[in-house]
Length: 122
Image 1 (cartoon, rainbow, N blue to C red):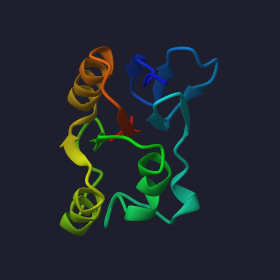
Image 2: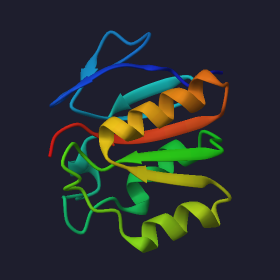
Image 3: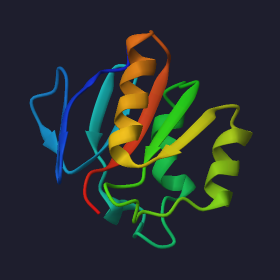
């Protein structure tokens, strides 16, 4: 299964190709996507993205995980979270969200098994 392209991104709004829903924050993986609800894991801008936010995407068999920190990079990504991903044998890229979406779409367009978690506001 291919990783779906992120069709559009604007403040507080993301669309994933092939999905009728729009998202504020989202998780994507080969063959699917869904809203990223921070309340599920107690995530907040600080301390930021937790391993539990990423487990679902990592279970989908991705080789690369792209994390979008928000439009103003307010969402933190602790070193322990990056270490958790690399210990799973997965490359991780952490970028400002617009740059993260471009990187994700580039990898997906090349047929890579890429997943991502993206924050579309601050």
